[in-house]
Amino acid sequence: MNPQAKLIFITSLLLGTTITISSNHWVMAWTGLEINTLAILPLISKSHHPRAIEAATKYFLVQATASTLVLFSSMTNAWYTGQWDITQLTHPASSLILTAAISMKLGLVPFHFWFPEVLQGSPLITGLLLSTAMKFPPITLLYMTSLSLNPTLLTTLAVLSVAMGGWMGLNQTQVRKIMAFSSIAHLGWMAIILIYYPKLTLLNFYLYAMMTAAVFLTLNSMKVLNLSTLMTAWTKAPALSTILLLTLLSLAGLPPLTGFLPKWLIIQELTKQDMAPAAIIISLLSLLGLFFYLRLAYCATITLPPHTTNHMKQWRTNKPVSPSIAILTTLSIMLLPTSPMLTTII
Image (cartoon, rainbow, N blue to C red; front, side, top):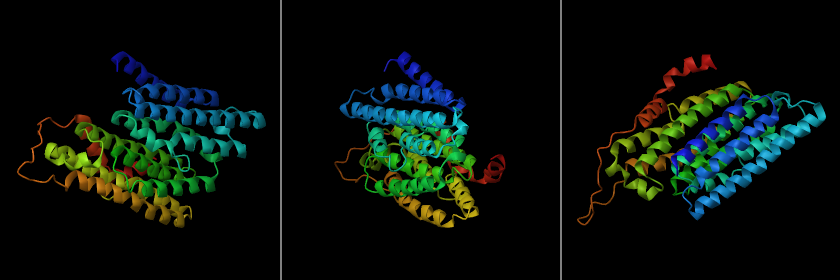
């Protein structure tokens, strides 16, 4: 892709995100979402492969539908209350429609079917943008309207997302699809706590984005797209494979890594809100996700290619690990001791 074109698309992504997260008026928020959608489409379809074109088409249709629903819910609210302010979404029908629209934008169950397919058809770096940066504007809209949303509906969507994200990721062999189901499960954790402690949702998102960025950048450096390639990666890049192992275990939420921090705080807050059954259910369901993270980690570090006489040695490069991967990995595995400081900040 032409560097000037890529610069324009990345700038448009930043512009769209900034407009949405800084707006008070529904029409401005909708405009930002539309700019975001139009800017990411060329990045998804840049390889001109039929799979990439299909992914871009699916993404466009789903996001256009969700944006229409966002506009419809805000217009319904303005019709009944005369308010276009994002924080004044008081009409029950409007808040239900908005929850459905944002769930569609984020890929929460039952509106999740597009996300694994789109991620599978995109390059790894575009997949990283779809999993992190493109989720930020919808989450900020949920954050701003959190007081008006239906707790029962959001809790149901969240539990279903954690269940489906873990369950459907079990039999996947494509790394991008596994990361898509991982994203759906993490969004469930964010959605369940949104109404009771919105800042915890944002903290969870920031930590999730950081760990996912570390995983995607490592996979991109190793040029890994499926499990069979991952199995032979140890001989080529032992350092990157070790980094991948640690960041995957952190994404799974195992102590003493960073990924344990948001899960721990969310379970603690749910227990305070007399929602211990919901906390127990999502904790048990996250074990499904743990299985496929361990499977990925096992393939990355423990399986070795067969050492037969006619086995050709992999070309091993001494290329140093990228500084961005090193920094993100360090943060992904070492932030748990700072949890007292983080809890005082939020």
